[in-house]
Length: 218
Image (cartoon, one colour):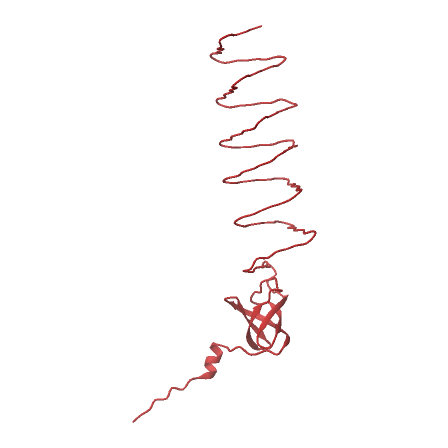
């Protein structure tokens, strides 16, 4: 009768799957090796252990970062990032939970570029000033409700495939010359239409038609 015994190489298994080592209570320093499902593998002076990102550590750790960790004896938390080798890599602040900033004054400045991206955005201001050397706005659907609007500018250019304007009363005052150009133009007034000018010219290449129950000339 023969018996086969399977011998397990414990040393080989430990190299493939390093076990978490309990770290002494206090502050520890190490380097991030990798990230897996929100947990980080940390090298603490030759000992590999697992740590979690503390909420107070706003910057998301990356592999190669030299970090400070705090241990309570059973768990290890990354408290801050002390050094990062990849200087060109962007610093990322990312959390699954909502983040709220509240202060009397908040300033955001992007020296080269500032990008705000979201599925939905809400801006609420009692007073707002917007200044830009060049402004481009693109929207599939836009609704604007303004009680009083004052526009002061040197030049305004609008390119639209279709425009619909409805107002209870409109006043348009132009100090200089006003040019309007279109392939076809229709002016319809339900009650009264008045055209006045010191010099008025109506010209047509083919026909000029004046139709009415009464026509007064002169």
